[in-house]
Length: 320
Image (cartoon, rainbow, N blue to C red; front, side, top):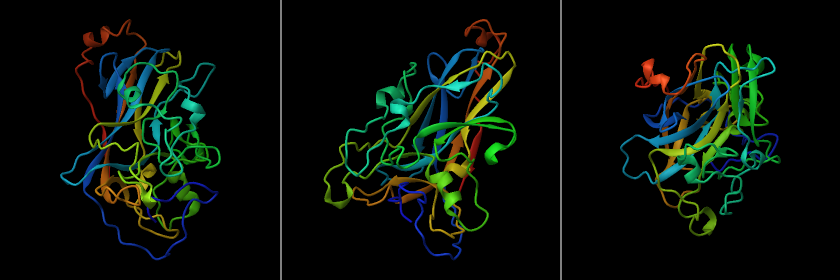
């Protein structure tokens, strides 16, 4: 199934061949990177006090050597936050959604992209009044498609999550944690991914003779696709929140019901007249960010005294 696939019904997958396809891993030529704002710069680690606010964003890059890459096609993902405070009268929270989580540009060629954050808002480290996807919205998020942006709290394995306490962001239909599929693809397992968060764009020339794409962006490196804010609880427990994505939330190479090809990819445009969300598929490296909650730090300046300000830690996960 091509990336023309949508999320417009109770079952968003196209019926296809039930035979197994051979796994064909792709080179790791894409990066999905999470970053936090330290007051001056976007970085991969910040120390914060209870009750404070930390700005967060997701950034994608093409890291390969193909000279024909013209721009991002699509990345599917679901931001997750570990060690999330889900108990008591004061809990960790995130910022409000822009336009209630509804946004995108559907059908093809409609503009402007209502409910989307601007490129300037993606680059800024300032606190925003509302959050969501930045600039790439070819797959709309709305109530009719059951994928309006929402957050889900998971505790002790609830809804198929790993053990621990988490927050996960996806479309509101996707209550269950996404999973790598050990066997034939089913509608339920597929929709856990398709109704996650999609940052996508059509090619420079729109399909169906609809002219030039007014929202086309040719950037291929350090593309901000998502922003949110972490609003920490007043808990004085020392902990570290890791911000990342499960590989199981990434785009799947083959969406035919019954397919056993569970290769996960990011897509890029190499043609100006594509009829899908990109024809170049790549493996993906996921780089996480950390918020270290340290109750005894009296001020941001004390971070340097602890020697944490100069530490750069990147936990990388790769998928082919």
